Length: 255
Image (tube, rainbow, N blue to C red; front, side):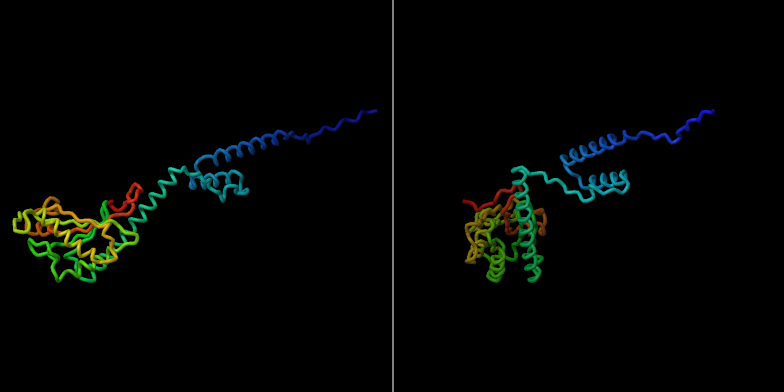
């Protein structure tokens, strides 16, 4: 009797059980990467690029970083203080710029472009007034017909809270010697003082925040070799100082 041949099994099953721990290892590595990444400083652009890469790798799976929430790194007290100081300084500079706009509007309305100029400087807002609109040559009293301009300027210098304002007189280098003034220094000082007197007549101005000084011919803005240059040097300057300095400290009224 013939023996039956045993059938050969051609459908041998390939053992793929190793894929399960391999997938677990990949998952753990991915989780470790995410934890490490979240502990570092988040760069939004790099994070988006990384999200795209992982989405492509996992072929359309759920975008686990599609809507990332950047980690808020707590600021130290020093960093917080510096941020507040910087913000206060910027806001104060913006306020000075708005004051400049108000002064320039007054200049334009009264057609005073040739007599006035404004400029934002590191020291504050500088308003320059040509000598010929306020004083006669060699004199320190403000002309009667131009007192109204000084009074109008006083209205523009009312601030809440107040700001420090410095009035400074300047002359050209032509020597002066009269019964009233023995030097340009004296002339420049008295011009700034007399101009300041008109300003503080405005009852809404606190004199505590105002001061006057004179430099004579020693701080020219143009050459004294020409008549045009000397005319530019004869001037009164109104410096409206910032309330907050660049380092964040308050610029308080002089004691």
